[in-house]
Image (cartoon, rainbow, N blue to C red):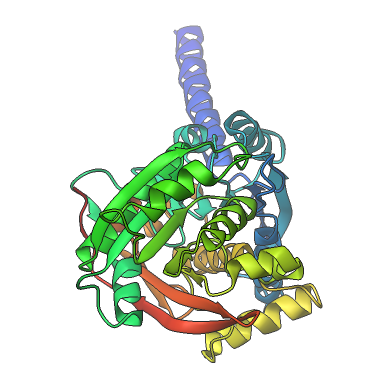
Length: 412
């Protein structure tokens, strides 16, 4: 009897130990990258690509924001251990491998900044319950519980909210949209084509007439001959050029080529895109000439703004990387890090991925003049609806319209 009781006790003890070990294993995974004094993070960027497109400056922006937070003592006594960012080469498979390396080998708590048009690690991060922050340019960000675009989901599904801010800001800038036409040029990448759909609706919602959308431009490299594309644009509005041409293309070489070709063909309308707000590209004379007069549409308050939040950004970047030129990609890294830090603070000292995601997806609202407003979980399925306009005049950027948020409309 005594021996029987001992065996029973042993079974109970072993079972309890097994459950405890299982709980410890789960907790250990949930707190990966977190110690009593540090939180480990790292990102995935498109630092290099065949087209020359690069988001490498996002690493500088994130580092600058983290360094200010660390200098102030960190968040609830923990400082950010930033590993920098992996390069996906604008290749989905490489992005997936980079995400797995950061989680499985480097043991990060979260991924940021993630700023890669063809990022391939979304499914893995969602399955693992690992938070990731950056610029949600593609559909892989949308509908997740772990992916947090600093400006929401930019590829909403039909019926979900779709942004109107770009069209409405342009309408205000041009004195109204009535009687004005717009043509949208994209590449044949999935993200670019989807952007063409949402941005077209942004302009029609603001009152512009859609003259056409062309998604036939190869995404890998600029075409050797722009004439076929330019000819379509120049005759798209009943045989005449449209009033506005919107480029939804990731890559300076693409936009420089397109704009230069349009200007040679005599185009006198308005050119606008989401990527040309970049002082670094002005160092090349041909690029500066092609971009002269272009209206860029950043989804953050321009660096030329007098807003206190922008003064703080400039100060942080200068302290972290003296002499660094301020670029759009840098700002995206900075604001992604800022949102991450705010969420860490709201989650509290008892930090696990589960608690962090509960906070992030539990009616989270954060407003900042630097990027507008973010709301989760709502913005897992739609953009935040905020943006500004910047115009290149005589080789210098000027604020055309400061950051403003507009209501979204259902995507048709």
